Each structure stands twice: as C-alpha cells, then as structure tokens.
Image 1: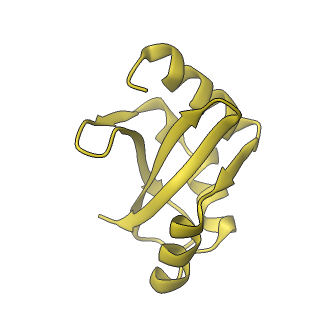
Image 2: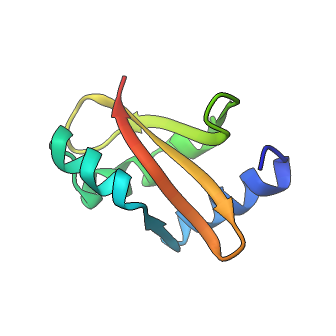
Length: 91
C-alpha cells in the first residue's frame, strides 16, 4: 500500500519493534550475513526519516547501516495485521 498512512504505520511499527520477518527476508539475511540486530540498528538510526516507495515491488524501503558497517535496505509492507519486512539487500 503506497499511501502516506501506510508508511506512517510502518514507521511506527518499526520504531516500536512491532514487525515480523517474511521467510524470504530471513533467508536473505542468512545469505548476506545480516542479523535481526543489524535490522534493529538500522531502525534505531535516522533511516526511518527517509522512506522510499518502490513501485516495482510495492514496498516502502529504508536504507541505512547496521552493525555490519555496510549500507543495506529493508523492504517493508503494511498488511492487515501489521508490518512485514519482506526482504533485505545490500546497497
């Protein structure tokens, strides 16, 4: 959902650590050596202040740094029951 309202809900959920990882996101994290701690570090940085709508995948993307010291992105969607991180990838 592209709306600013959905983006606001995602940001709120991420800040409150009220989100889930998709199976795909967990697979990509394992492949890329990223952990949930890296994702939380990205969330706690100023990355949530710069959401980018990805029209191809219909997700809100947030890019920043975790403990990995390299730039990466989390792609999120808001569904009926809350925020889902659908994938993670290196920039």
